[in-house]
Length: 175
Image 1 (spheres, rainbow, N blue to C red):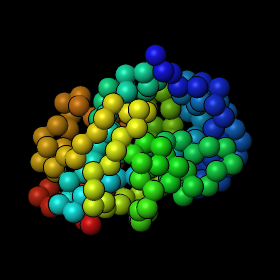
Image 2 (spheres, rainbow, N blue to C red):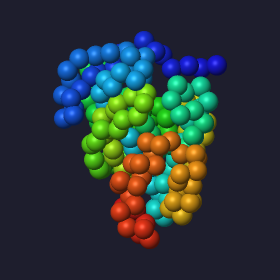
Image 3 (tube, rainbow, N blue to C red):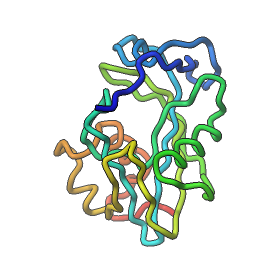
């Protein structure tokens, strides 16, 4: 079975994203509270549906849950947009897309503390998930809202969706 590389080196950052050190994936995911940067890309279609990936069962955090279409760690020495494009290509085969910055914020749980750089894009075709994922599909706003709090999604996705796209209960996400 595949497994995350616990020895992979992540940059450590302050809350503005400035690199202040480095640590391994295992150290960052051990409950240490070491702040490390990640990228998220929310992928919409022209109908306003949101593409979500299913996390593989071998992942060290939230296996088998539905999550943001693209999400990944920024490698040590890599800039945010390069990481976003690399992750989009690796996870969904997306190479030619316009990314719009949404927000940077700190997400923390018992295992990790991440500086999330959230972006969005709209695509005209269905993404092709790689073998890094257990598939994916477009979800309507109603499907997402009806599934929140039921253990279907990662807690990070749920909180980010509510923060970014659910400010008005009956409104489709802004394009």
